Image 1 (tube, helix red, strand yellow):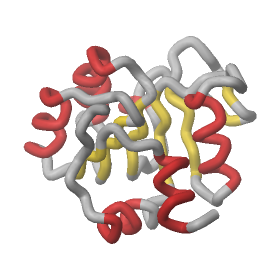
Image 2 (cartoon, helix red, strand yellow):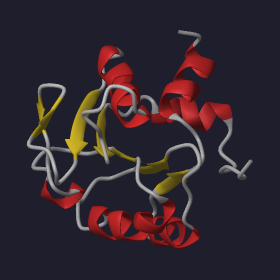
Image 3 (cartoon, helix red, strand yellow):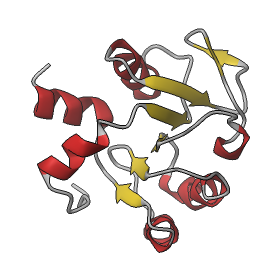
Image 4 (cartoon, one colour):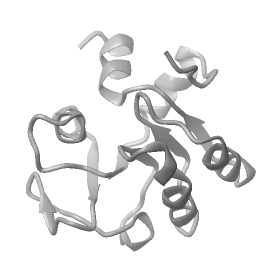
Length: 140
């Protein structure tokens, strides 16, 4: 089991107050976590923005090729990509103003990406699932 970030439960709970979540690597495949985790977030009132260059629409929402190309506010960048792809995702995300949290899903971590985000004052969560943490903390 990989280590995960050192955020306390109360810090993680605060992150769920942020409602605009760009999901990088969001999938059309219903069997993948990158499909059902964002669906869970949508069902719980979050504004999920698909980021996937291979799809024009996912779950009835317009998909964007990159975080920097999203024309709306983004609070959290939730990443479903292999760890080696994460630095490029974060580098792109840093072009966009207002991002507060970079969240790397379970099994995903990049020390380089963490450093880049923290240098810009952005919180970094890693090796945690947004669905599992929400269920654990809010008892849904």
